[in-house]
Each structure stands twice: as structure tokens, then as C-alpha cells.
Length: 370
Ligand code: GUN
Ligand code: ZN
Image (tube, rainbow, N blue to C red; front, side, top):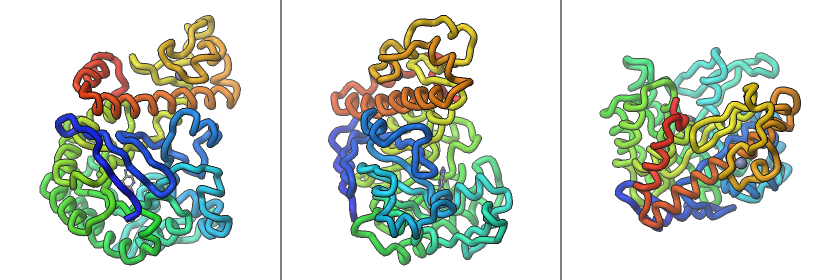
């Protein structure tokens, strides 16, 4: 195993831990910004370090299409290629294909899809996904899983869960760099507690370096979502990291951390920035609104970030619809907000004041939770 996971403090099920990866030692709970094409849109790697970002996510599917994982490998791996010295995680690609391409077709062999480059049919197998991720060289790589929406019902959910379990063995067998890259398994099973339980047990038997909870945040209600997270974290080992995939909103991160999850990723903070929305403790601030045009305050007077120190809402209002700098500055602030949230969760657990911290967060009535 190429990681160490040390729980430094607990509050009931919540944990604050140190996660030592080949390229960086991270503190959990942690949020991972999504850098689909080997970049977090609009931010330099120096800026990401400046705001305290510890690990970022890349996507196998996008990187394989452009510039190609063989080229990345030839040029020394993704860390060197994108000039990022801290930790990296790559997702396996299946989820992106299924969510982005309507023509993706899943069989036992793998995921077949039409190349968006030349329209030719392509097949992503568990072996190929791991091979690509070995080339890219991230600290954490994800197993290829069969993902179905939580809102569907019927035998397809069971089929996808068992296929995910069969594919994990093909991923383990194909993984050539277990000494420097950590392969995480992904729990599937929709909203069905019996299927989730079988998947958790099946993955735990494989003694992987870490585990992800997948197939969530796809339109199910909060109650069902949190119930699945609570069930999975309860069945996963205490001494391994737990990653809830595709999550997201600040409230979900607070709740999932209380339920014993450690890692999160979501496009939300950077995507919403590009639409002119800033994250603030009370919820969101829409910089496009006319009221912002003459507002001389920073986005958030309590935020210590470079954007809040230097720019007014009026200036950002002026930029957001007209210049790329607007979305860059908002992404910088929004990711700073998420990094501060991660640090506050870690410190509040360590210092025995997690419940007070959670209550303060929940008191913000419009805390982003849709
Ligand atoms: N990203 C968000 N959810 C998922 C999931 O269930 N599987 C994978 N591989 N990636 C995800
Ligand atoms: Zn700020």
C-alpha cells in the first residue's frame, strides 16, 4: 500500500486524520477540486497551493482523449506535465462516459462508447482504465465501476453492483504500480441497503488501500443519500480513508463528515463560479445581480482570501459577464471557501468542538443544500 491513514481525533463517527500519499501529506476531511483536463479551470498550480489545496482530481477519460496517457507517461507523468507537486487522484472514466455520452453501452467486457474525436467505437475495460491510470501516475486511482442512477429501480441496480465487484478483481490484477499508486474500490448498490451491504463486504475482503462510496448525488433525496453514506461508512474499515464521490455542496460535506466520511470531490464550486455565483457562509452570493453593481464590500468580509482582500463586489459584478478574469477570481474565492471548510472541519474535530461547528453551519438558513 502506498498510503498511511492515521486518525488523529474523533467525535462520535467523525474523524480528523492525516493521509500520507506518495506526493503529499493531507489532512482530512478534505475537498478535492476537479481538474478535468489536467487543470482547474482558470487557476495556476501556484494559486492552488496558495489556497491550501492538497489533492486535485483528474479524469482518465478526458486525459486519454487529450493529450493521451501515453504522451503524459512519456513526458514524466501528470504531476510533472501540469507542474503540480502535491497529490493527484484520477477517476476511472466509466462514470464520465455514462454521464456525458448518451451512446455509452455497458457490457461485461467494459464500457463501449463512440469517440467524440472521430466517432469510432471505443471500449474502456477495467484493464484499460487501470493501464491509463498507471500511465497518468496519480497517487490514488479508482476502479472501473458500473454506475447506475439512484433514481432508477429494478434488476439493473443489482447487475451493476455485482459487475462492479467482478471488475474490481480485473482492476487489481491489472494494477502494475501498487507500491506508488493506491487503487480504491467503489461501493455501488443504489439505494438498496442489502446490495450496498454485499458490495461493502465484497470490497473490504479485497483489503484495498481505500474505499469510495459511489452512485450518489444523482437526484435522490437527501434522506436516502445520507442513509446510504451512514450505512457504508459503518461497514468500511476504521483505518482506511472513505471517499464520497461527486459530493459537493458544503452542507453535504458537513453531514457526510459527521457520518464518518473523509474525502469529497465536486465540480460545483468552480462551475458555479463560472456562472457568477460565490460561496459565502450564509449560502450564495450572485454577483450578476444589479444590486452588486455599486456594492463596495468584498464577497465575504470574513474571508481571508486574495480576492476578498483586493476586490469589491462592484468590480466583480462588472467582470463576471464580460471577462474570463471574473470566473477566475470567483473560482479562487470559492475553492478558498471549500479549503477553509475542510480545515475548519479537521480542526473542530481535533479540538473537540465539532458539534458546535456543525450547529453554526446548519444555522445558516440558506446554506447551499439543493
Ligand atoms: N463520480 C461521482 N460518482 C461516481 C461513481 O459512482 N463512480 C465513479 N467512478 N465516479 C463518480
Ligand atoms: Zn474570499
